[in-house]
Amino acid sequence: MRLKLSGEAALSAAWVVALMASLGVLFIGEVLGQAPCVLCWFQRAFMFPLVVVLGLGLWCQDGRVGRYGVALALAGGGVAIWHLGLYTGLLPERVQPCTAAGPSCTDEAQIVLGVPIPLLSLIAFGLIAILSVASLESKE
Image 1: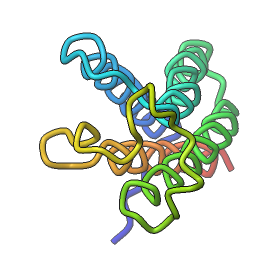
Image 2: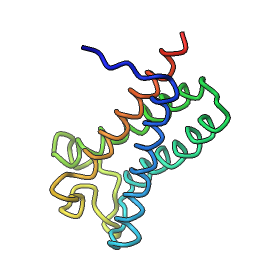
Image 3: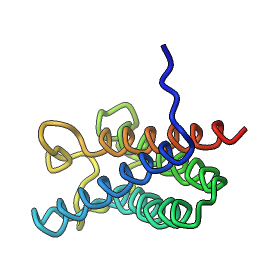
């Protein structure tokens, strides 16, 4: 059985995921005081615009905005995969972009509620990409 969402419902769900992810990382950084690593900053650079782009697409009723959602989500998801590879040790330490002076991409501070932040990010980007594609398919 396949769940069929309308384009607006899929885009709304993608926007909610982007908003919750953005608010979540702001909470982690500003309330919990956990400084983001370099790769977290790059992921934020792709997540934060998703809130604005998808939100404006909903407001203006632009059904084509899902294209931009897919592009931003895939780029952010790529960074999240790299981050997760470093966190799990699948990628060698020498490709780690973090410096000794800042927070590490692989330390225990990368866990929230028992789940690694890079995995949470990858899940969010994946959902946004899927929902953005679904918003485009329903227009055809």
